[in-house]
Image (cartoon, rainbow, N blue to C red; front, side, top):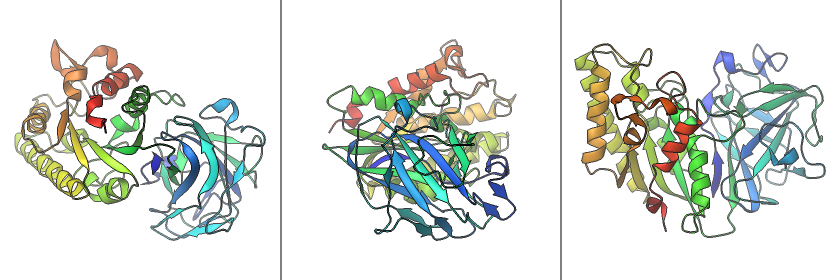
Length: 390
């Protein structure tokens, strides 16, 4: 079942690996890539998932290992000596991921605890012969690039830190207890912009911490499929929610519930006129219905989260308030349409009671749209745990 995920995206030019790991038409040649991730569900075996969804050429992976990071911490380059385990693909140490495809490793006997950090190290001897690379730029976690093959090195010599994840899109575990997965479909608010780098304090992380402290929800795994700039209706930074629903949610193993918390970028990028905002609000509610219908066909329970305030944000907050009116209309539909199996009222949890079109200042990261860690905690606390019982 899915224990950790990161939505695959086409890497923007500014987020490509730095030189010498990025050249014209060649990525990560002769390099070692070391990344840390925090799993949710634990178990006696793990399996890795690599993505070449946006690469322009086959992705040749030379060698992979999984280890425990030094001190059990996220964002460190060192691993615990002797903890590295080789990863295989159909019994072989290497694999080539076709263009547009993903590839899963063989199961690896490596007991991992719920909520623990894993280190995944990848060596690419030949690199990927393309200027396009699959990644998840908004990792809020430090990764490392180093020369040569240092797959099992206790620490990396000559390493360059980068705050992105590349190529790795999921980790699955064989669960040690009865459990199920909560998938999250979202944008930068779910991806964690404003959270602490290497702190794992996005709202999905805080929700997971809260759930595992309750015996009734201790078996719930969380699959965060949020991505900065993502929209429901149209492609932007990554495919739209409608376009990626099958890949990022319905194809995950063990999914039982889905929270949809997305739409602010659709409102914020549509023209700030009454007509345009009425159209995007209507299209959003129709899209939510499509998501619910498609998820229900896979027996998922779907929970709708209201869109949070952005009053004062530049450029989303328009002087005449057309986008705010559309946000209110969409939220009223989420609350009152009855289409979702339940409603999670994030708007009510974080808005300023004295000025409801704005975030409470204690939760505001500073741009009046994104949250600081206290705001992400408030979102996590607003999810009724009873929705995830059973």
